[in-house]
Image 1 (cartoon, rainbow, N blue to C red):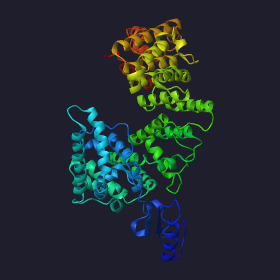
Image 2 (cartoon, rainbow, N blue to C red):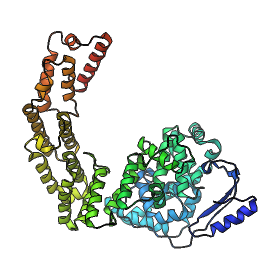
Image 3 (cartoon, rainbow, N blue to C red):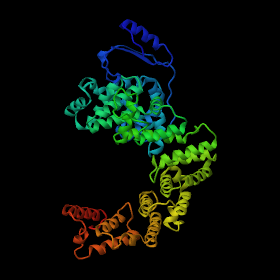
Image 4 (cartoon, one colour):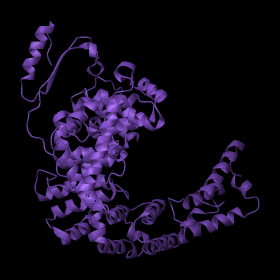
Length: 556
């Protein structure tokens, strides 16, 4: 950055800076005191982008492509992800995202004029898609895809013929309001994306695009606008430079992946200022982190998680040290990926974890994958984490095609082979937390891809373990002591049969029986609140107790 006293000298200095290596563009602006992100066209005195080299751009290799059944599939997550990967070098060369390219008539024309590039991409995708479809071949599928490309181009050209608000002139929410007032409901989502593309295409920096999109997302009032911005932000996150800028300096790949998981979970990265202003150097990162954490950007979160998965499946070492350090940092990574029974990234991540473990133990092939899955389990320690990993792995391609029998054996060893709850959950936890942990496994099994008869076998075993634990540990006797106020005992008993505490079955029926006996007592409600002096507190206690009974299914 430099300052000059005249436009001519500033322009001359800008051209000197542009000639330096690593500089892609320069801009001379008036010294108005405005933040960089708030500059308008009237503030820009001179701008020049360094021409990209004429190096040949090739379509990137991909190992699969989803089938596009409708035009909307191209704009959807899987379609855009495929386009972003196929055209990565092209998009990076022109500082574009897939969604910008599909909504800008000018960019669509440039792509169509780019010789064999589009043909190569369509041919590659057609081959993958034809293999998944009956009664079609690659040539026929190619023609179908080109017809979709024509429709995409037609829509982009058609938008030029209609009045469109300029967001930079009228504001984001005002521009969307204009579109909502004039557009048919079925075309509104497309037109919002198109209006955003008009602005973003003019920003020839991925970091700049991200800053602008995040700024808009912070002030966006309409859910459709947030959805559209999530699309653009998720596309921008495919760019490697953006990710490097977002993550900052990292010690090694494992550290970078852990930071990315934290970002995807909306966990603050580093200290945040008490009052965040646009001048703060991490303003965009912090706002993006907050938006993801609030659940407003699910596609952007998914892109970060998928990036972690692909890096985990790759061959790059996680650490810069020896094999033992690689093991240690991988265990730290597992703490973030599998914090409890739900694995971040689901079945695909479970497969990636197994693939990375096979690299660490240096054993390949099917035998190596089987050993890898077995050796991941001891590092997880917690039974809920083990069950979550196994049940997610079961739904992966690796689980379906290779590891089905091994996963069954591991589940048997974990659940059927445990003689008691205390053997299954070895941590020194209070009874309610132990029961909740075991119940979470029960519920996860019911949601899993296991066959129904296998689910019944395992859940019946878990129910038996819980019932034995309650009886042998005299859990109900300890709760239902006569010297304890009735309303305290009642709430503790009802809490015991909450869905997250005990599943329906033998174990919960033991507690339910005691609750039912209490409910049958004459004047039960009066006795329930007899030791609560305040009438208002009595009424609130009765209301909350009935709400809990309803939640536990006592009234149907």
